[in-house]
Length: 363
Image (tube, rainbow, N blue to C red):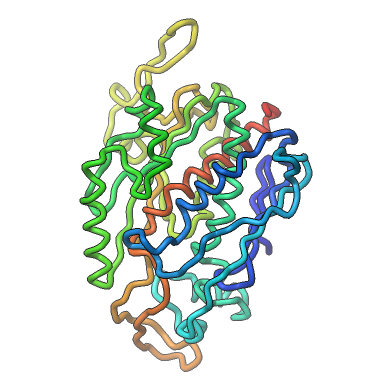
């Protein structure tokens, strides 16, 4: 089956890590949306594996986009938007052995079972983080549609290896600081944390190890009353596309799992009216009740597991010989996926929110 996300917008991702190219087709996108490629390329660059960055993959890809259809004279036409990125890096011979000797915590094993071992295993194939580049393009296009609705999406590094940043909602009245996040590779609000995170990532790399982390995202300007109960709620939309990002293993909205330790008296968001608009005194529910937006900022956090490719001897199996064995991974990998994952989370959130608006006839 194809990798298709269909919820208002239809997003189809194609390609493998070392195939000729990777790309996306976006269907049901509104016509007449002005497209600024300078902003799109800025987002693509934040995700790209540029060698001068800390803890980044050694793979050299500049993620230069070629738009094939759906955008004409810098506006969307209403027909399917399609774009391709041609892969430039050559595949390493190491990947030849992983088809039947799966790397721990990778999809080598499950992907082989799913596709009867006809899958392209090189660099993780269709399961690779390389496939987040088309997501960033799609989300960047959606971002420009949301600007017309005055909806703004910001993400940052919430935590890495015990180092925590400020909470993003506390900056809801300080948009200039939030926009600065879009210029940072280590995207934190507390600049004092940048070098601390950098040192931790570099140390993990020297140890042949990796780090996980959490990305927090906030959506400002979302009108109240958008969403649906049960299966079509905003949480459902956001969660389903977040799990399209490789290495994402958890998501929570508002106080999330903290609710399990709270009482109703300190967990409830009490209503009040300000300037004729209904608001809540707190935002523990993250701007969503019953799957429907409250008008408060939508806030959620996404947990990334540590990069599974590490340079340490690990246990695995030889599927051809049906025997236990050892593996020492090689190839390209980030020491901490979270650093490049921020822009991907933001892009995916843009897709989910625009899809909700289209589905409900609000765009």
